[in-house]
Length: 171
Image (cartoon, rainbow, N blue to C red; front, side, top):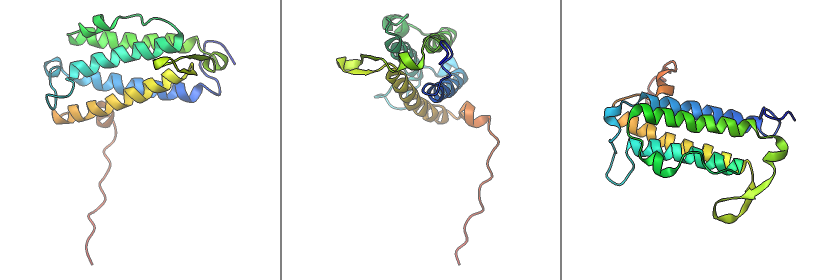
């Protein structure tokens, strides 16, 4: 396996899914205007801004765990992000940090055992899988938020519209 490419038999499919997830999340975050950042569907759930900062924090934390490092941005600093430009930049930085982690991973290092959340041992690549799952959960939340605000998610808006099948007639 080549070092620094993350294009091995074990890692390639995981990296492809991670890249796809990054594209989805960055696309939907970029389409939300700043004047909607405080929108929340109900008082009990996160606002757009809180969803975005949570994603940034989790991206840094999951990838730092896989790298065996301290996250490069403190949670308290992430929670202070307010403006659209700084949130978009921090989101990009969180994924760029992930790229750095990917580039240092090989099949051999991916299979190393590391401490996980709660101290249980896990494979080094497991936090990356958890990040993908976490990102997709929040992406699903954001799709609802966007649609509640009369927007079409960027991914859907960029696809050709599917023709609806004709209605079934009763015989």
